[in-house]
Amino acid sequence: MTHRLFSYGTLRQANVQTELFGGPVPTIDDALPGWRLDWVQITDPAVIATSDSDRHPILRPGPSVLGDAVTGAFLELDDAQLARADAYEVADYVRVQVTLASGLRAWVYVAADAAS
Image (tube, rainbow, N blue to C red; front, side):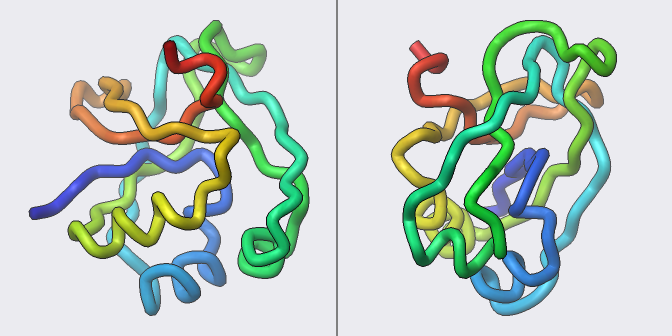
């Protein structure tokens, strides 16, 4: 089964895709309305090593200050790749389904405290 996973951050990086998925995966530009970017401090050494950063973007509900949607891209992943993405994301994130600007449904990781 193929899953769409919207990324607005490190999952679009070539080094992260290589580490998690074994190489590049299909990535299609899109946007997510109704959410805004914030930042979270990462403390997991494995995630920092994979992304080369201890500061990652995170989504919270509300309009973006840069426009009416958060820009990014959706990745096309199989079940095993989606499971690896889940394992990569720290507890600050939770995966939820959303409707992208294109009208397509996709998974996305948002702030766990905002997903209720």
